[in-house]
Length: 244
Length: 392
Image 1 (cartoon, each protein chain N blue to C red):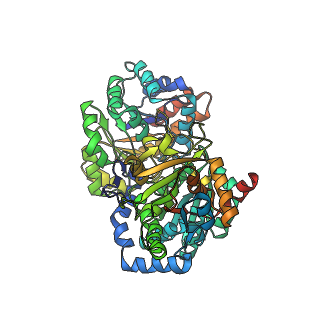
Image 2: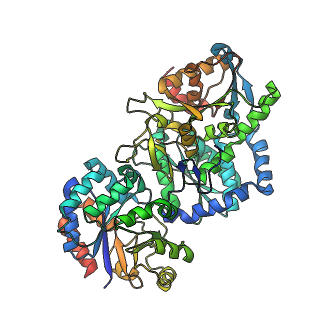
Image 3: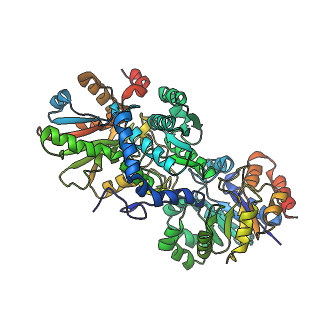
């Protein structure tokens, strides 16, 4: 069974919706979730997630607030919860302190796209290990085989394979790049490979997971949260439609 | 300590590095591997130096400003980067990087611009070298720098407004980075200042170092010594300052002064004075001083000058500040305006608003009569005419 991983930005559409959305994702049948930490300058994201970050900050979302919300759902949301964010806010919170809080509230791993492997090796990997947290690196179709293996060796939990070199939600994302998917499948990687960026529906999900262990949906899900008053029913049926 | 060049990972002391998502890794790694080899090659230098001389109009004069010197009771020289083709120092870097992009086999150029000077310089270099050019510019800046927007368009560039955040320089950088992520193989991003992931700060500083190299030779001719007592430049991201300081930072007897944009005052909430207000953080791919909240959200900066309206400074400058090698002043909007009008009135030179911040240091610091003070006049003021007219 291929794993479905759903991303949403914490603090939208309303500040207090984080827990509600996390529960909905679990109950709709997703296998895990990525919770985005809002940042003022999310350069790896496209317009939809950027707008979500901006709205979340306007709503008053902060890392401190997010940890309070995660503490409340620690026991009720049991599928893996991963925090995804940019390095600067995490550093300001204090990297060690941040990891400790993650462990306390039941977060299983982190994705920080702008944390380069060299910094991970020099400084941050040890801290993550101390708190028993997974860390996922991204690879793209342009990443060399040698580097994919290297990033796989540093990752734990899963390896995030970006479907094409793009920002999130890019319509031009190549969702069935055979060469790329074959290459990933042939490398005997340690971690399961999850494909992300550009997956909008069940057929996209099935396409990319033919040769990978899972798929990640972000923009399409966030769009539902941002554009619909009755997002709860729509979000639920969206996840069910992809998974079943 | 060597202040001017970063270590192999792109660090100047605690500042620098390359904090980029994997999507940008191939581009940045390619640059890191090749930039020094390419730009130091004889072939590249022959072409570049020829363009600097015959197209840009270098060397720019080092002008002894007699009237200004008398007024401030010291010996003031102005490095006339405003006399470059396109009206600012930005052309040095834009041409250098456009040539580099061609050597790397890229045919599409993206750039960000605040005041428009870097955008115009990049559009010019692209027109000359036959490269496609896309310039990102904050929506607010597009309005306050209309003449430069018109010039870019005439030069064949596509100007795309950045509509997020404060709609100024910071947001234009974000949009340009996004474009680069989405177009990794065809495109080179000509960053206009000494900011961004390694090797950009070093790359831009090297292309701008022509400024201090010329100052040394010209001072030697004029006064029989290469080193002034002071060099002064304005710092937004800090490219003209990096170029002005480059060959002096390891000369202990040269005092270095950087002028930041204080906006309405460092305590007003409307400022861009990063060394006064910033803390260690990561912005646009490098670790430096950043104006940010306790939560690590970047604070929108303010300056009357679009070119200084940036919430960070380059890592080289952050290191100069941290090591106390350079003295930083915060110059408010009204102080910059006053200095711009003073220079215009007594020397007949209308400076860019950015450069006016450097000139305003003359009112803040007491120099000795025999001190030799070199100020980088980074650009000319035509583009700021609308702002000047409002305050006449």
